[in-house]
Amino acid sequence: MDQKQLKIEAAREALGYVENGMRLGIGTGSTAEEFVRLLAEKVAAGLDVVGVPTSERTAALCGELGVPLSTLEETPELDLTIDGADEIDSELTLVKGGGGALLREKIVAAASARMVVIADKSKLVETLGRFPLPIEVNRFGLRATELAIAAAAKKLGLSGEIKLRMTGSQPFVTDGDHFILDASFGRIPDTRALSNALHAIPGVVEHGLFIGLASAAIVAGSGGIETIHA
Ligand code: 5RP
Image 1 (spheres, rainbow, N blue to C red):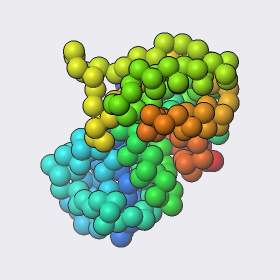
Image 2 (cartoon, rainbow, N blue to C red; image 1 turned 60 degrees about the vertical axis):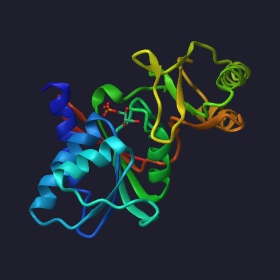
Image 3 (cartoon, rainbow, N blue to C red; image 1 turned 120 degrees about the vertical axis):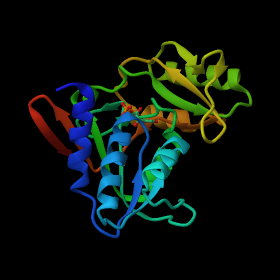
Image 4 (tube, protein in one colour; image 1 turned 90 degrees about the vertical axis):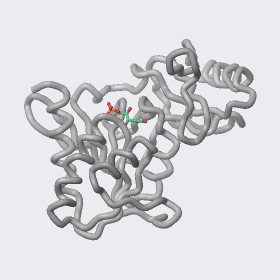
């Protein structure tokens, strides 16, 4: 089975968590998009749900496929969020933000009673940090924020390249009008310490470590589906 098919299998399994009448947080990325496609088929067949998208990109796909949408303003409490991840460890701490939607993804996940992650097996890691950590930052004082991130990381014994995410020759701009710094710190043994240190930097809007938010991860591999519970 190729990776796309594995993503579809994980997304299909996640549909089993969706019940009539639910208020759903809908993630961003290629795996979440497979979920939207399958969800749209169920909606067309009569499933009654409302979705709060985690990005403009997801909102556009939902609109195109006829998945009813709300906003977090109108629907501030959600039953379930289904989203992908860039890395997942055995405690269901995640790295997210590869698609640049980490801020809305985290706000939506935090507003949900449950967050179920969908992924192919390549996303499972022993220790987070192989994937560069996305850090969403305010445009103002970009260089000062970058230096503060490097200094905070150094205190925790972490170092590595911190790169401004680009789209072609221009910085990538998030839905919240911020920039993203991708930090290649390597293994992050103490995610809580790094999270606290990053949150203490004024220019950091949010980071891609999701700690204590996911309640389950549906992971599809060539041997079948494994569901990991928190
Ligand atoms: C977007 C994300 C995505 O969930 C993450 O990047 C995984 O994407 P994909 O399913 O395409 O591998 O965090 O901000």
